[in-house]
Image (tube, rainbow over all chains, first blue to last red; front, side, top):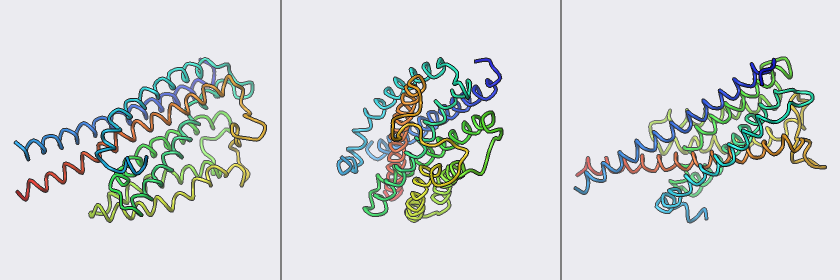
Length: 47
Length: 239
């Protein structure tokens, strides 16, 4: 794992980890934001 | 099943448990896939760069699957005017773009030691770059038009036209001379990959697809909530 190809292999895994982190975080934050907004408006409509 | 899920209430009830389940299955596949992939012996020709295959190939498979989902959802949105299908199409695009970018970047990192170049204008690489541009174009077109319905319709047409790129990607290595290796798994005579590489590759491939399934459902749910919020805002403004 520490041979001459490590300089290609580890960055590939790091980029993949970053990509997944972005997808999971953005998806989760987006979902939470709109669910809260919709629920707040629902409450406002039916106090 | 599609007809049943076309109802937003049924979809929300279904995805409430299906999305986390897909996420758990994805983790259960990716963790052993990563372990087996990172502990696999070096390939006799490629050395340890073969380990990039376990993240590159699944990203490429998932990017094509995501575009097929985008195309399918766009078809239902355009022809049957299903609002949920439009939400699903909109939700698939950024995920598909991300998986395509991962396939391109990891492929470049694999290509440099194998081919001696970060990038070549090869048919396979170029058609995957076109796929990435199609995802970006879809998102740009949607956001460029103020009328959301009109933007969605135009973007759906672009998504349907772009479906032609999927067989081009798949068969590019057969139709043209290519540096990229040909079909290694679904080929006459069985897979050309040794089980020690094939098993982690299939685990990772399935894991990526389930991860996409989980994220796609959650993003579609977010879009349903967004539309509900916009509708409620309009109702409250009128009251």
